[in-house]
Length: 419
Image 1 (cartoon, rainbow, N blue to C red):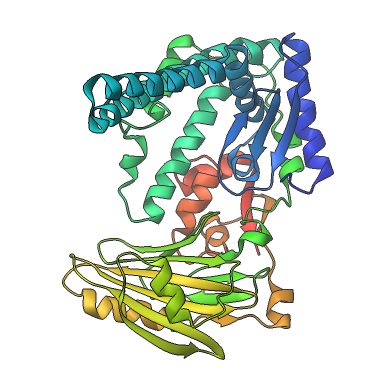
Image 2: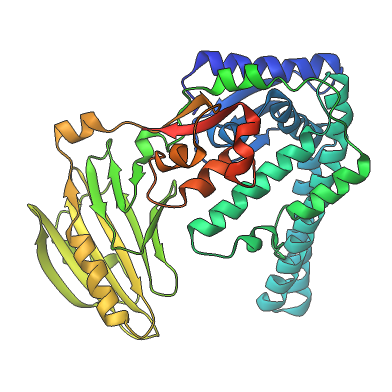
């Protein structure tokens, strides 16, 4: 779904068309748009449509970095990487089927398929590096600074480090390339780009860019729900719950996760189906192996059910509750020496599930980006006002692409987030 800002959509379209026109790119026609998504991402489709997300735009600092993003995606298209990747996957599947038939073993076929898909992903990393290289002359021909590709990758790396910290992982893991990764490590991309020698000559377009994104929503879309510290509130589904202290909520499009590393996990999701019978029967039908300790209960004014799963090093519990015309469910998992106490804390949190009233729904607003002058302003004070419970300075510096608060005054104007 496109972000509902005609002005921002037109701005991104102008930048994309400038690249196409000045670099005389073929393979058109092209279209450019902003998706109403808080995740940091960009991609191109085979029909020439290029999309960037709100989350990515919030990280970028100027028009040249936006142009670098689009040029990178257009390079994927011009080099027909989508065709090569699809062919590699088809080849992997064909080889797996042939191996299974020749050996009479499904396991052998699966092993060949796994190896083939891993090889296709490794090839994809080569595609990413090639797209970086191909994008540089496109930037230069369009009149943008070509070192924008370097500063773009650097910002993505900073954001990845922050994301690791948000789930209590060491920030250095952000640059660790896994065998199943579809992208090269950030340091690998930066090293390759620096060998090519990008230049700061050319247009940056910082002022115009910041004006274009000023006021942009940086939250999840309203129909995805909002994370507010340890609370999750969904104005469309009209529901809310709060997780225990020490847990961090991650809002994914398919489910809401709450994580406390080495202690517990909550997976929350809702279903359109409304069982005609008791919720205990619904849990019994959905869960395998069949759960134990099935119990009917009530959460607020709604029917609910609780069930456990036996065995293993984890305590696993399911809590289902009727809500509106559907059913919502918590999958609770606790581990470690205190797992019995932890599953109790998580169950209490699930019992706090409630429906939102009209006034609460009306009062829910997404967070937005705000551009402010930094001259004479204390960066620590700016960070303290961010509407987040923790890592405020880390969030502010990552948002503005700097290492520390001391570097913020050099920017003259900075990005911040307001309720």
